[in-house]
Image (cartoon, rainbow, N blue to C red):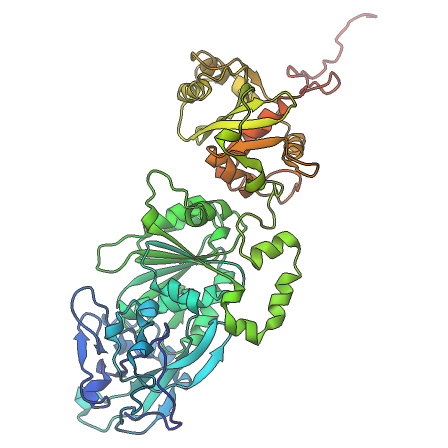
Length: 614
């Protein structure tokens, strides 16, 4: 084959490297362009029989990827020959207008030894397509350089050569015209780090305008091209958002290379790889994915999903093939999943069953996207004009402030203190919020001026009442705690035993005298906000640095959508410790006035049944 008639320069791969190979396809399958004599001597292709594709200039040894390129497919392109489950021939042929015709035969190799064929020119291929740098050869197809604001960097069009060959039954007729599919995009520096990540869980983002969506699409496609037959899953909160933000752009960017089937809600590539498209707007939606297996899972806007939904998808990341098992996430501060994303990827605060090496966070801001800054400088001014909290989250990518945050007053640099800063003379008491899903108990101290200090905490899931009482006893040991305030529902008698939770817990030695907390929500949150306020100087509430769960939960608490003065119940995992703190603050004041005291033994008034007068 011959280079394009417009004498384009050699292209960059999706990851910024030069592409080494081309594919020629026809009714008899796919084979490497070198077999047709279109590449200069020295560029050899090796076949991959399981996929029916061949890759030029790359190793076929185990663990070394095939070159990550492909071309528009026909039903014969699929290795299993199943055309019913894949796009039809008519669908494949409809992509033909996206291919550029080139009837020239025979190709002369580029002659610029110091230009696009130097060793450094393909150094980013491994980042974009999981391909070793030495797998990219010096013989790249032609391209035209241009700029693309979505990629975040100057881009070049990557060329895929596709030539229709006659089948074996048709004899050695002359080959059809060569068509070239150009794919644009060269990543910026942050996107290259995202492409190069080999962590099991990689999160990318932070601020707006960093090119997250493009990077996620390009990573999925290059993985599909490298590993024939790989199964990927792309998730967003709603399918409408997924279709608008990914399906349409992907069909535009990779027209003829990927085919979309609405009935399957899946994208197919000619080498047998697929990208399933899903949504998860609630916990009920997550149940549809239980028992399913995927090699690669990509979650766009992960902070819109709860930790439970994330856990369900983690369980789907499995398989027995030789494919990588990875999850890629994009995220911005805020949303129901803000707490768990911040804990795992930003704060790197891991539980006992979580391995730190599995998690990697790559922050990105609009300032990391030079092409967008040049093409649309007004976008930066637009972000700079936002309200302070929204500006800090969307422009600067700050995870400690975001819109919808219930306690913006809480600032770790002001409210968190070291154990050495705690006063010596404190009158101690405790507060707890009990549930089988989580026990949250706090030990607090009050000084002579009424300031409160959270000294220690215990937060554990799956404890029975007696086990929770033992944990509280250990928490309060040696502190001289004067009382323990707890949710009033512990005083309700259980039908199965006839005993209340209060009776079970109070019977455990070492538990301070228990009293029912004032559990009014909005007045309690207002009082806690007063203790957190530092408008008049130092705050009246400080938290010891050892109370990590409370420190993470307070800034992650969200406003209720229907009652802005109340905290939301979601994400539920971050509500327990703040609830216990609310009980503690309200216990420092008279819970009820005589007029406000509710009648806990309320009875409907009876109608008089007197027979007087008869």
